[in-house]
Length: 551
Image 1 (spheres, rainbow, N blue to C red):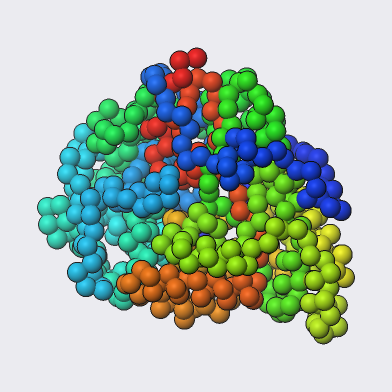
Image 2: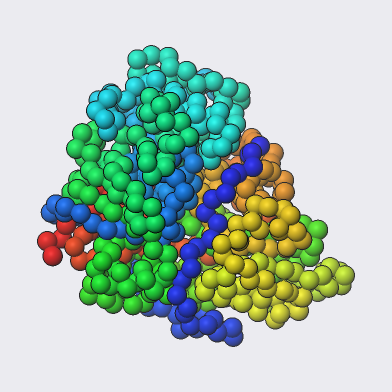
């Protein structure tokens, strides 16, 4: 099954302090609906209005701070991906509408269950003007396959060999059928870099002095440590359908919520994805720009980390989940940008199983209001020694995550569970997710999760299958179904297996709670527009859509 996954997308960044969560009846009030930025279904948009004019230079803030590298083989979080997605391209691309389309590969074929053949696009060049070839593609894929330090090697677990089989053709041979692999090439599992550049610079690739060599619409220009990364438009870019109206972009690294908000409102920062939660209400009404919300495969959830404690009991898990006021948390903690999720996967990741998962989700959906009495009845049948065990939840020391933790503790207290909330420094929180020694006997862990691609098998493989990096409890209840689904070519039959897995996870409320599904917010100052509002910025060249407003 899945190999252990490297560190990625662990927690949201620190935000400015906001109003404390009202524990009793916190779903009352809430934000407005029907306006951009509220997160309501009617307000969501895939794209912001298209830009009309050219812009010489913009400043864009990457909210998670300065990346360690811009090497795409080692990029798997908000900041590096938000920059790299405009520079380094993949064989297939995840469009803002969450469909996977041809990109550097014009097509794929599956002549037998263990073979994928890729036709490589002609006329693509790297930033130095040299052509992208099948040799570069095969080298890039083999690098993902063999580099033990890379983030995406586990997606090649079923790959036996990758070879150039024609001037514009690359063939992948599998150890066993894998009908997820092809779509994964729309993540950096399918990134293409210049072979010559990587062989020349080795481990220095991705550093400030060396950068990268790719085929994307923006080329690496300069990295000023502690200040910014600059990218400039590549005028030899192959995809003439993209507007490319902005010539230069400076990516800045502010992480303090107040400083980001001040920069946005003053115009010093032209735009950002996921602006501080505490500032959303102010940004929605500011004349300095506009806040848009789009759909996203993002979930705030609780991971069951200790199956030996009270969380090892299915009724305890179900009772705690139904006692939490998810509606109030989405409204108040996440400023109206969060809504209760009926399943562990969220709709933007339903992919090929959308029809079946939507039907099943509708059958189990609630409005997220706490069901205290129902939870108490469920706990009545739980052995006293199990209920007596203390349940611990660890969250990072940030305004919204602490409020979330307080809301979960309140739910546990109200139904008579013994509960302890631990708040730890945000900088060290990822150790609880990935280091068993640090985690110890912790029962529950907070996470904000997004998958590689909008495909439910990717989501399940990371969160609920043995070896998945967000399956800290070692849950194996869907392993057999998952393996069967990977090897099932017929999409409808594969989708039915996905629904079976989600039903089992929901019934057991394991190994992850159904929590809050989030929208993706983007702020655009008055000078620019055109960016996708949906959650596309981690692998899609979003900046290529930016243009001026004439203001």
